[in-house]
Amino acid sequence: MKKIGFITGCLICLYTIAAHAEKPQMIGEYDDWTAFAYKEGKNTVCYMASSAQKSEGKYNKRGEVYMVITHRPADKTFDVVNFTAGYTYKSGAPIVVKIGKDAFTDFFADNDKAWTMSPAADKKLVEAMKKGERLIIDGTSAKGTLTKDYYSLKGFSAAYRAISAKCRR
Image: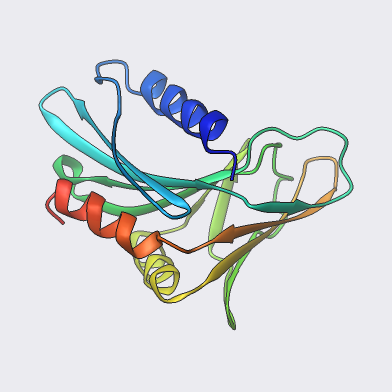
């Protein structure tokens, strides 16, 4: 995993989104996942992130590929799953996440990012991630390029416990 570029990108991305937020602080590195927390006003926001270990597809250029799980206790939102594809998703094309024999298809995309459709879908996906070894995301770019991104789930549970403890989950 290219942690230096990925972590810097994640920090900059999340820091610029939150105009009144402090700079994110690393809680810890847990194998292939890294946990962070920052203050947004008086509220603590916690998230964990990992980059794809391997990506497949017939593309010439692609941005960073990573996923993030976020807890925002002040908003009563936990386990929010988001992934960035490094390209703009094709409108209406399916996004499929596979963990072992389980497949998840309840996603919506906006530009290069995708989310589950509901908090219940987030929770179900996170529970599968805790038990799994590898996660694969199948997506389609706006140009019609099929991609497959592979994530390790090694360290996922430890990073999840860290953000849950920090954000009182």
